[in-house]
Length: 268
Image (cartoon, rainbow, N blue to C red; front, side, top):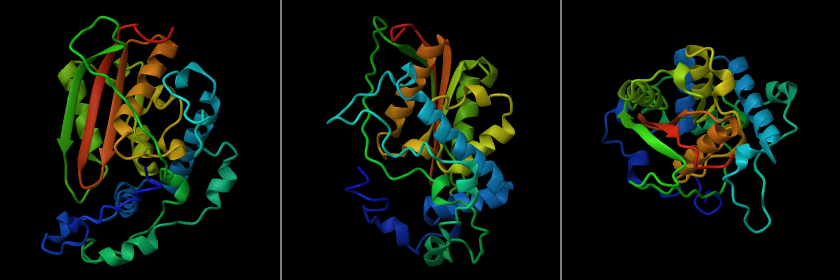
């Protein structure tokens, strides 16, 4: 619940521990996203396009089977953080937002001056949320079967990249390819990540985040895995697909991926 515990609200010692070598020190994920965009050459235009698609698909998914697993609470039955009125023009007019956040982390950045590109529209809005996933070794009544699950560690100085590693390993483990996936939920952990996926894995845009993503809905930390998985299962049910992939990327070089096979136990 980010309204009660904001980002870095736990005040962990690691956030400012100078005992670590610079390349392994913590930097805020928004700063890491700007560094990654610069390293990969991901453009502002690509990130604007990713943010616009997320908002448009989130709006279009309201009232459809793509939200079949969502539970209304206290009268709230929609994505409150989403901004359906977002346009390409409004996105292009927004300023970069995270230059000031980088200032205290000059040593961790090894003196590097970043070309800050991410705006608040390229970051998941702060949101409250919860998710519930029931995992069992009984197939009867199940919505899906887990075929492969991988957690991966990566270079801590290349935050938000290990999800790609986990994804590739999960596909190999399952003996499948991206082309086999009927639906993909790829965590929009800042616009650079989904933009890089679309750039390096072309041809899958119509199957990725079909009901919108984190850039529109937000990222309630701790609930992300269950929310992404339920979104994937809803999307598979809606298209009567067989295979689905969910990918999450985190700060400091962590990533996770899971491949499921729909069993038909969900919504028609």
